Length: 273
Ligand SMILES: C[S@@+](CC[C@H](N)C(=O)[O-])C[C@H]1O[C@@H](n2cnc3c(N)ncnc32)[C@H](O)[C@@H]1O
Image (tube, rainbow, N blue to C red; front, side):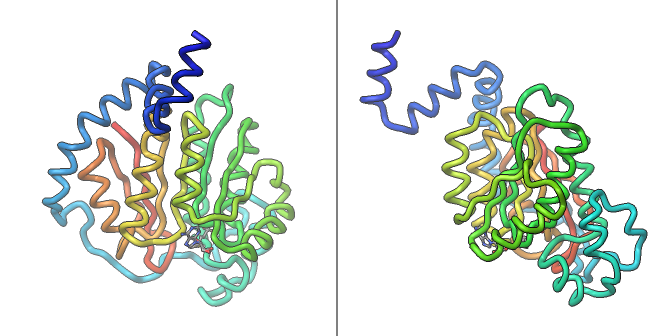
C-alpha cells in the first residue's frame, strides 16, 4: 500500500492524483460523477440563454439608510453605520461593502446553512475590501460557536491591513484568515487543500469570465457538502451574465434578492439540486 502511494505521488500527474483523492471520498465521488455527467449537457444548453430568469434589471441602489441599526449583527458595524445617510458617506465609513439589508441576508444565509458544526466550517470571501462583510460572516460563525474560519482574499495589501484592524475592532479576528492574492489563483490553490467549502461569498472582480472561472474552480468543493455560493451585484452586468450561465451550465438553483446592495443592486444564492 505504501509502495503504491509512493508510486502514485512520483509518477502520476497532479490533476490525476486530485481525482484519485476525490474518489476516495464516497459522498464526494457521487456528486463529482453526477457533475461530470450533467456538466457537458448543461454546457450545451447554456448556449441558448433565455432572458426570463432575470427580468426587469435595475440600477437604482437598494442600500438602506436611517434604519434601525440594532438589527445589525455586530456592534462595531452598528457604530460605523450610525449617521450614514447616503452612498458617499457609506463609502467613507464602510468602503465598498454591501450594506444593510444585504449584510443581514448574508449573515442569516450562512448562519441558517450550518446545520453540522461538529466538523470544521469552511467559508470563503473573495474581495475583502475593508472587511465589513467579513465581519458579518465571522459573526455568524461566532454566534453558532462554529469551529472554522472565514478565508478572505483581496489583491490589495492596504485593504487587507485595514480589514484586519476592522475585524479586530469587531472582536472577531480569531475567526478570520486573510490572504493577499488574485482570487482565481487563491481559489485554485485553496481548492487543492480542502475537501469541501460550506459557503463562498464571491465579491471581487465582477466580470463575467472571472466569476465563471471562480465558480468552476470551487464548484466541486461546494457540492461536496451541499454548500452555497453567494453573489453580490447580481441585477446587471458581469455577475448577472455569469449567473445566467451558471443557471444553465450547473445542476443547481439560484434565488435572487433584488431589494438590497448597490451598484448594481441585488444578491443571489446558488445551491446544487
Ligand atoms: C466590492 S469590493 C468587496 C466588498 C466586500 N466583499 C464587502 O462586502 O465588504 C471588491 C474588492 O475586490 C478586490 N479585488 C478586485 N479584483 C480582485 C481579484 N482579481 N482578486 C482579489 N481581489 C480583487 C478589490 O481590491 C476590492 O477590495
